[in-house]
Length: 271
Image (tube, rainbow, N blue to C red; front, side, top):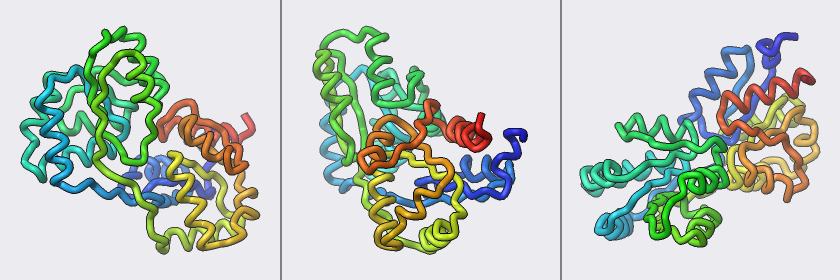
């Protein structure tokens, strides 16, 4: 069987909301599959006053690099800058800095806002960024700004600090668990009927929220969950979160939607 026919009439689910999931939907439909976009996270921007104070303080110092860890960090930072009339100051900051994007989706979002991206690591993860910075041989005292989620861990900041790099890390939003909606109800019904063929997890918080939501909808969902043909995680932290729940996924080494779907096809085909 050709890989292009593998998804025909199969249901492919991903822990990402539909409004920011157009590429996934398009690619699955093009190959005859049925995409389901599960919203696991609701993003709540920080209070404008808190952002304005923190960001204005950051702008009083000279920084050398900005690191963007997700498309969400780009969207919300630009939104907050516009809301607080700090867009010009933000853009001036970025023009004076080298910009690192964690992956191609984040790069695209920055370029859509006319921001030039200097570097994208070969491994689209915190570990990949750390390896990139080591290769760049940054001097001690280099200043880096990392705008990110309030649920992020301190791994990258701690590692950079140990290298003598000064990190200004600040939160622009906090993730909250998404509400149960019709999409979730329909998904759970398909799961009961063993009609979910591929399940893709996009982040550790998406894993946690998925299990919490499903427990509320279908208390014995794990029985049906075991019948899903292919489970895939994007990134090592996502894999670790699943393994902690005794779920052992295939880890997509290419942290893109296209790469992840290609992995799913190879597994389904037995290649």
